[in-house]
Length: 249
Image 1 (cartoon, rainbow, N blue to C red):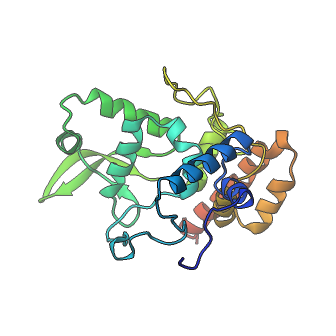
Image 2: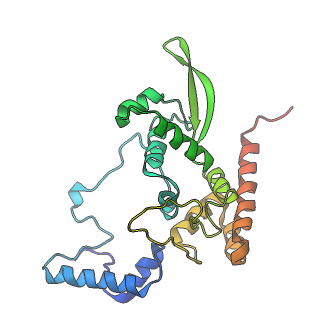
């Protein structure tokens, strides 16, 4: 077997579920173990989770690309509708280096195959409201002709989290809240209501606000975590904006 850590025992499964931010649920662990046992009985090959099972066919990064933090998965799919998320990715596929895009509504309709603009307009409005997108009317020089276009900017991750915390879309543990979560009629799964911070979220916050602020955030009382994190994000964002502003003579 290739080097690496395979999920063979209960302890490994528990470590995996904790690292992935999944609920600490014995039923979940039991389900994983039963699935593994059925796989073995069918004669399937056990796969090392840290290695590609077809090495020569593993994905490699191709430029240009758009990046989305992995830890967004803890809340983004509950807060955004499928079209919202697709449009979020699509708009910034057209972004230039500063993170701005002026893709037209006609281009959106052509690539998505939708004739009705209403869905796009509503999706953009939701993205703005939740802090995933900023929009400004402007004029763009295209083929020596100035044309009116919406200019879209992808805000900083600090700004997105600030907005989500301010409106109560996520709590202090970055759990999505019921008030803003998508509702489904069938197969509705209860929201994650974890009172622990998943490893990937902690790493992401460390990149955004620094290790010492994350330590303070982790020590805060459960009821105060949201306000503590909000103040820290505002502080870091203000510093970033001050650094980017032209110096006054």
